[in-house]
Image (tube, rainbow, N blue to C red; front, top):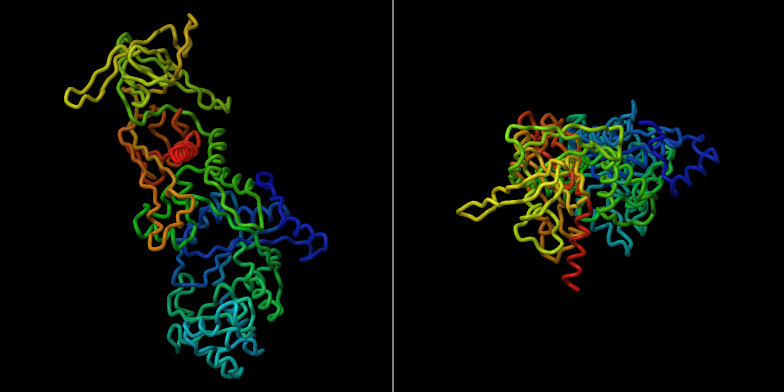
Length: 568
């Protein structure tokens, strides 16, 4: 993608970089990185960091690396690496030949650890994890040094080498930095640099049984890659003094860490632990479920990368945590799809209509506009015949006031076609359900205009019954009922806030014949109904499945307004 498509964020980070360039800090270079841990799938929160890191690099003519911080073999998988790369490319960014892994640096990180031991700045601790936590103490009281803190350099080197050789069990030994057990910053109370994990790493296999912690590996990996500006979210602000300590102690290239507020979205969760609960608990169909906040789920639902990038740009970059309304994301999706999505006719809950005065064997083809927002999209031909389907909700036998659609004796306009009038209703003799409408049409109103100037109050959509293609349509909605799904009373499972109507599946829907060969992932506006996407997983030749991407309007605003009215 060209740099012109991404506008550099105007924010405090840009101001810092401008000052660094003016002072020729880092020789005027700008080199960022996006460093995900491959222990899950990327979500909308990660999109903010992706757009920021790659966008800053592009805006300054610099570079951005993709680095997988893979220091925990028990949670990381090659599957996640592959999915993350697909998501980043889909979002519109390319790291070219700068794909790196923290596991690439395991040998160098080990040497860094040896250097700290030799300089008396690190020691092997034989306390258990529980004892280490107890010795650290609460944040408002000084911690207590480990009884192993003053081991000699020679003993520490020997023990560390034995850790690497696999002589100890998990949790029995750790390598800790010797900093300050009285510090008010808990990260400086002799943090762990290496722990023993007898587990196979997805890249290095069984070569290692000791692994660096994220805190030890992160800053040094930035240094190895020559990163100039290490952009992190606010939770790493308290970790910065520790990262600075490591870099200063090792006397290596010192990146500048800058923290910004992470992206939070209401009506969802973005904790990987909670997302895993949803997947493993069967509450969703997988990481790519269209209700998930993952990029793979949003892509399957029909969201566009342009809409997500636009949202990231609109929300800006701040030092203050806040929550973005999900309606803002949905508006960005509508705004983008309105410009690009072809319009088509589809009926989700079909009601059969017979036009009594239309010739039985005749078929005519009506001109329909593909996209009124894009004149270059042109028109298409839609078949019209004696038997049609309309939306069941577009008819009422005994309509209330302000219901302007079809009713007995009433006339409406069929989109692009004719005026029709309901002259009869056929019901199931056993259930009383309406199964068919008998109508007449005015042949002088083709194109939706009456020569005599008479008006109708409603225009409804339709499809020709003999030409329509059957489809399954999945109506997706927000996964949770509450803005903060985790806000539950003590003892209540947060998953109780899952919206039971977040997925409604409709079978035997009818769509116009032009959609018969619709490609998976293609997006459309079903006129009057919303924006829909051909499902990329379950659609196949002979089976057409559509996912609702977003409604035409903010339906939740109506719901919330009604709730406030009822409780007023």
